[in-house]
Length: 179
Image (tube, rainbow, N blue to C red; front, side):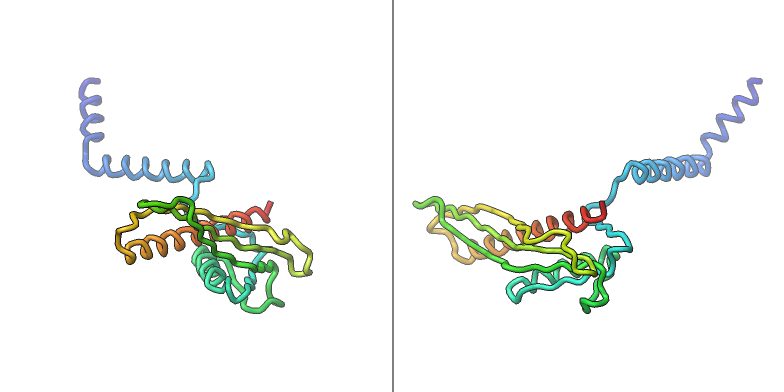
């Protein structure tokens, strides 16, 4: 009896068993996390009956529409250049960018805002949502005597971050259509 316990302990401490145990635990963790609905950030799902998606935009929203299309394609969603071939149509319009100064003095504070209006329809032209606004806001401060290049760089970085927020809001709204 004692010898069988010793042999069982020896087999557990072998490197191959440790590897199998570790691999099994990692596999179990992956299965449990996927079973609870966990998804990596940035992953977008859209059912096949809503694909391909066509994105149209005003001239001032073209960059945002191109970035949105690129991110959707990277998630495996089919994008159609032709409106007639699409099952879901997203129209982006009225892209607005505003900046206003909210604090004056030696330290100045500005508020940035981005806004876009979006509408979606199915292949028959029936609206799924219409003229829905999506907005993003940021504030930034700088010392009046600091570098203008640093201030402009900060502003560009904030605008890029705000555009990413708008894209995130749009993708969440598109995903909500499947329910």
